[in-house]
Image 1 (tube, rainbow, N blue to C red):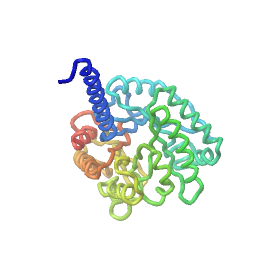
Image 2 (cartoon, rainbow, N blue to C red; image 1 turned 45 degrees about the horizontal axis):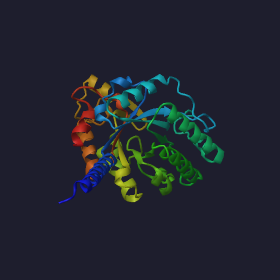
Image 3 (cartoon, rainbow, N blue to C red; image 1 turned 120 degrees about the vertical axis):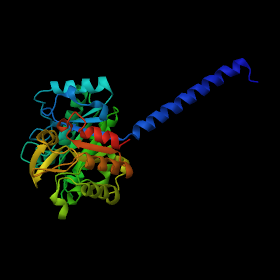
Image 4 (cartoon, rainbow, N blue to C red; image 1 turned 180 degrees about the vertical axis):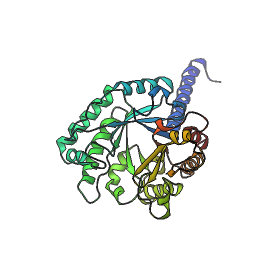
Length: 329
């Protein structure tokens, strides 16, 4: 029998250990959660209309670097971002990231010279990181998504990107914030992302849409086979841990290479079937394809799925976010 005076410290010790184990289990569960990352542009939907119960992260798009690349241009209307952060944090803990860059960064589609000018100079990188951290603190953001499309393998920008990611990730992680990146689906452009940079990112969003799919795959927009191709490239060839790979899903259509079609919501309103992938010349991802890709992500051990973009969904039984939620369970 344990004396009473000895029993109390032992009892407290057991409670502390048990509590620590529960905390550790909770942390592991959070780290291992299947992420549903939704890019959001302020013109697509009111922030309070977003179905947060189906999302773990929201990437507000975009913050644009100034022509020098060193600083970020102030948001034209920051009230929407403020509303989004308040809504997400108040309701179910969804995290809000700021996505920096994008394809249409300001100098024409795919012109990433602003990033090049900034990242090739030590002072440029320092100033960019400071500007980014100021923005994160100002709006109480949970992280940053770096959308540089794209650093080049055969150019010094690949090494500059490593230096930039090192400094930015260290600054964010020091205050318990995250750093992710949007990356090309596969191919030569992907080699501009060196292993040293990939290792510092919390996860990568694979843009498995809008690309040179090759062969018969070109006949569709972001088909299932393209998701497989993207996963094979980043996980099997490039060595990105599956848990850090987030496969991209489109909520919009294409009418040919480079030609955007209606949004998913517009297609359904026009009479398209939510289960098909084609309507009046437009290729899209319906419920069956979205569910199949989500199951693929689960089967391959991926960290989750990503959407461009969540404001383009429907809100009834045809919702693609609801389809993702069903398929990931």
